[in-house]
Each structure stands twice: as C-alpha cells, then as structure tokens.
Length: 65
Image (cartoon, rainbow, N blue to C red; front, side, top):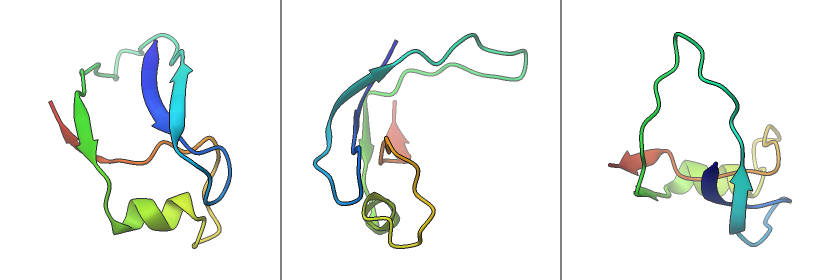
C-alpha cells in the first residue's frame, strides 16, 4: 500500500491518499521514501498550468530516503 498526499482537482487541497501499485515487474525497483520536497514545477502541475496534469496528483519528486 502506498501512502501519499494528493490533490484531486486543479488547485485542490493536498490530502491523504492511499493506493495499491500492483505487482512489480522484473524491471521495477521498490524503495521506501520518507519525505520529499515540492518545487515550483510541482506547484505548476498542482494548478494544471501546463494543461497536462492527471488527478489524483501526488506532488514531490525530490525524494529523501
């Protein structure tokens, strides 16, 4: 089970979100992420400024293990 925070609409409040990612394939790697940073591009995606965001959207790609 993946536990994260997600927005469900453009500009929406980030709230707890859980999902089951499915089975790993032979080319996948599983890592545990304890925290991440949110940068300007995450803010742009959150507000769908580029018109490509799919919701629910989990921001934060600068991870710390």
